[in-house]
Length: 292
Image (spheres, rainbow, N blue to C red):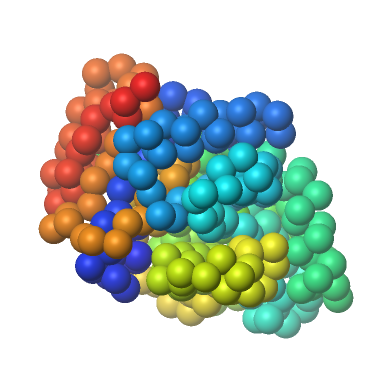
């Protein structure tokens, strides 16, 4: 969301994190579709969005087509693994996808791989433990603890001779600089943030539905992305478009002075306090629980 607001500060942007249904990556296809459909219905009732960005790879590969069918009056933008981008920078044609089980096991990735990386080997790794660590512990973890958390995944891909790692879960984007440090110079880290933001603004600014279908490279999703990490960068804020928790970003036409964050449930009072601290730190309005 931060990236989107930087590109288009006049755009009204609200992030809805479906904390009540965490973790999405361990759900079945049917469960994901049901949860996301119910979430979109709530967002529609409360905010009347022009565009909803599925800031979650698992949501996108499982539910995007169903949402477009069910909610034909809303434009949707999906987030999918940056397989095309990874293939464009890989030297040895072995690329790693780090994601949830639901994303790794979805046939959609095979379609992306066949279309954009046919001469590459795609090595998958689902890592629910790392996702849970980022979801629940990243607020207070030390740098050393963060590096230790990503080390098993990096070691796995290095042993598989991968020279590119795709961050295929939006949780991981908060750890981009941690991955970069752990990977060193021999493994590149890629994501789809730039492509998703660009496509979101194109869709938002398009009044012609036919134009939307022509934007992006695959099924109305922009899988290319444009960010390749060549050196350590400043740690991304947990509330950007592809943020620390899975959710949907609503885009309107008239901006507010700062974005807002809503969630669908608290695990405990400590988690509620974490969101209050997070929003205060980054100048975000915390809207609390999304209305039922």
